Length: 156
Image 1 (cartoon, one colour):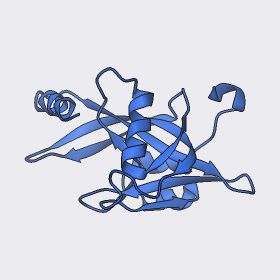
Image 2 (tube, one colour):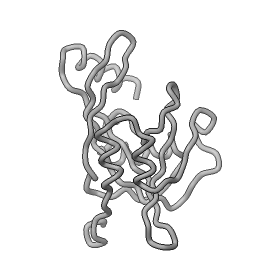
Image 3 (spheres, one colour):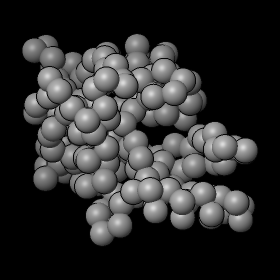
């Protein structure tokens, strides 16, 4: 993954937009309401969704699934169709670059008690409206707040 990040940084230095993938882990409550999981970022401790760089040889959907497991400790089924996109400014060593993020919904079937980044992140289940208030990126906040699950036919 480090090589992919270096490639993205090189593109950014040339002024090109760079891309990441993200997952919004979700579950349904006993009443049928949606809850989403947010995690804290490693450095600023802000609430975000699990995201990362595209992975060579893996689809965006698969990469988002892996990021959710590594960063949030969740397993499940990632829906085929992206839920949407958002853009944000990423802080690099000596500049900020604009990053476009493709977001996939991940229906959580298992929460791991111990996972790769457990010591560096906190996670929280929240109603979409509450989660949206905690997210600093306006486009992501709007995406989470207006989250709609596809019809069951579209999920396969």
